[in-house]
Image (tube, rainbow, N blue to C red; front, side, top):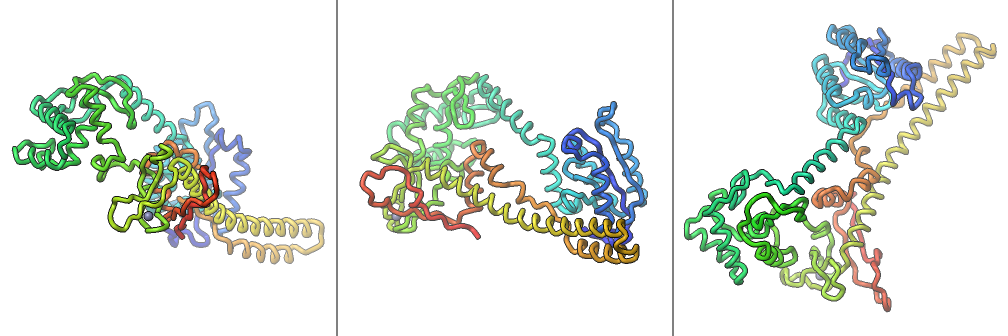
Length: 459
Ligand SMILES: [Zn+2]
């Protein structure tokens, strides 16, 4: 929101903060002030007051007297715009940022920063950007994430009930006898080779309710039977990690047989609407028939692979296969590089802008030198200076975009922690599809050949 209040002659307040992180980078208060004043001057604003808090002081930065004074001035309408050095590090944590957002919303006053440009806290985008940079700066994202993950793992390893009602058990893990009987019946019938649809129709016909009281479907039965919890086993992130503290309905052997029967890759175990299991299913496309490839175990090499599904309909040819692990790794890496380059493109534009500003600053210094040495008169100096300042003012203050927060490097670091569905969302953002070409006829070539992959990039 650029309001009329930010035009020339607007009243600006400068706020600086001395903190350990800024001081370590040599950004003492003098440097911060100098840059803030320059920004105000560039926009033609009049600085009405300068505020300064010290976070390294004895109080440990708990109180911020000048911040409170600035707030009072903003609320009293004594200022039109606030200039700070670094909006992302101005706030020590997310709570302080929310305080700023409220203040900006209440008073309609924007906060301009020297390093981040304008973060418009009145728009949803601006708020999101500010929240993300603040959370990153405070390391809160990483801390919260690892704390939660650790807690979940601890609970799982102790065999604690996972805290939800599910078919066969109450919300606190007690067996519901009628439902347990149905689970035992379903297990026995499945292991005797009866089809899921037939069992579902029979249960529905007998008026047996599901957990939600709906009709039985094949997928409902599969989801109940493949869960290790019915054998009293605790699962964490897809792996069995402990014996649960609750009672089993079927034996561990029965559960193991059911899970083997329902394992992905078996046609009857195909999941619908669940979490994504295979990174590249449907993204890889057979060169011959154009069908989306599916994951399977290669009959010859016994390695997980993607192949054109021969039996998925008349159109699929079943003629193309490629090894899974190397293909997944290669395409992820290609995506990171693509995203990195996209960011570099933008950074270069910013770099050019900074260079021009730098050249003009050098010109200003030169003029001041000429005047100091008596080479030009005061009037000549003033006129030349105004001309250079006018040129400088043509360049806009760069604005932080959210895209810069998801560089390839950041994704690369977090990749293995991301769920498959999130990894796929990244790949879908980069690739329309990837055509898989046939193995090249080189004798003895068994290694992974990236030359077979032809990505169709998203523009
Ligand atoms: Zn095919």
